[in-house]
Amino acid sequence: SLPSAGLGDDEGEEGHADAPIMAKRKSKAVQELEEEKQQRKRRRATAVQRKKRNEVGLNKPSETNVVYEKDLRKIATRGVVALFNAINQHQRG
Image (cartoon, rainbow, N blue to C red; front, side, top):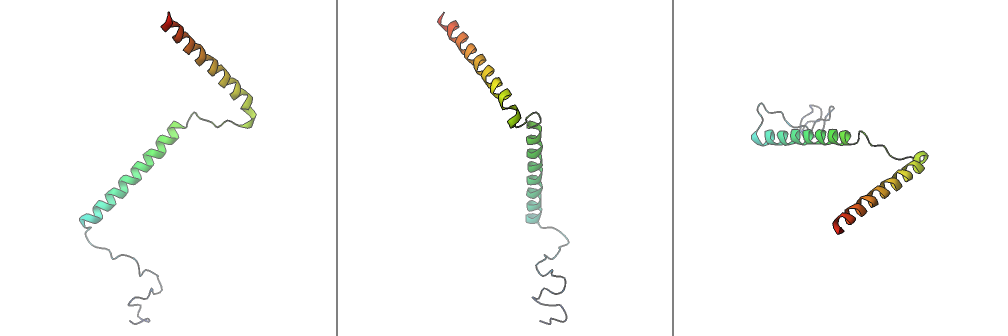
């Protein structure tokens, strides 16, 4: 190989020794790989959109509203207990 001519296994000045040679037409295998890659991108994008849509109304509880969250949990627990008691009473009687 002639290093001065930029031929052979040397990277040369541009560093494109590993770059693939571009074909005029893509083979069927290459087309299938590209289609799969595009499908993965679309699925990933829709998953990100779905996650954002599901998290729209959610907010993480902070230390400032811990008491408020605890009160809400107590109210919800009382409501569920009352519901189950009503169901239990109705089934017995």
